[in-house]
Amino acid sequence: MIGTAKRAGRDWLGRRGHARELRRRTPPPLRYDANHAGPGVVYYLSPDDNKPSGGIRNLYRHVDLLNESGTPAAVLHSRPGFRADWFTNDTRVTAAADVTLGPPDLLVVPEYYGPALHLLPGPARKLVFNQNAYQTFDEVPLGDTAAGAPYRDCPGIEALLTVSRDNAALLRHAFADLDVHLARVVVDEQVFHPPARPAARRIGHMPRRRAAEQEQLLHILRARGTLAGWELVPIDGLTETQTAEALRSCAIFLSFSEREGFGLPPAEAMASGAYVVGFTGLGGRDFFDPRYCTPVAEGDLLGYAIAVEQALRRYEEDPAALVAAGQAAAERIHSEYHTDGLRADLADILHTYRNPAVPA
Image (cartoon, rainbow, N blue to C red; front, side, top):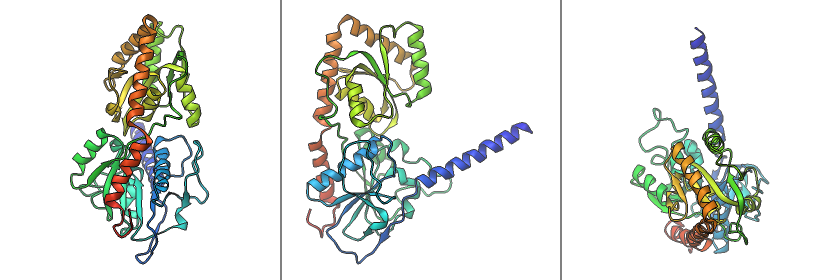
């Protein structure tokens, strides 16, 4: 009897949590007018979330680059006056209530709104910007939806955008009748770059990512005396600039990426000259190269502990070699994940999907 009551309580809490999550993933009401004219604006729908998020940072960056290139664009928030301010920006931002979509406009929708895509105006032309293919079906019920949900049955979706070759392969497999385009991530070299002098004996980590596994790993390392003489640097709740400064101060960074579209933290750590050890998060397989970092098999806690111990020993025996590997990682990240590359990606995408009646 008690067991039945506990199960009923858990089920109720689960339903309540699901309902709350669906409310968060519901886009704001948007108007559409088939007679609405104008230059054609590319609107990037974004959650009203001011916590540090690489995904929202990407939306703002896209809008900035499009406006710089002469394509009118804006980030579309629910609340009037809302703007993400944990990174410096003067991005064009507008409220959903102030916008009327028309045939010349293009609405770019994050995968976050997947469960409620059907609430968007059907005639509006849409691109889904899926920054994490591993979360495509989160909160999308398997039993109550048709094959190909959430994309195939949503009117107006013309293509999918994503941020890694890893994710593009998964999306092409799942949605074979939709085009998938890569819009690379940018790791800003002006913000994330190696230090002028080699970093200290500090190990950076982001404590909220796979927190239970992190605690297990740190217990193991401490039990073996591996961390003696090293300072652990938790990186959490910082601005973009503060995060970069913290990463530059660390010789080693522990990656706890999980089911990622790309995995910005280890990429930013590499760009900052740190030697990265840990999980790729799958999306990070695009840039985790064992020539300059140590990828660990998904979920392999023993392998992770051994890899960290080996990296620390390598630092003790030949610190210059570890610093050189960090420099090579920074060069690799900066050579591929840069603004000019994203600008070219966006130009290719808009050449195909911007309204032909509007000059590209």
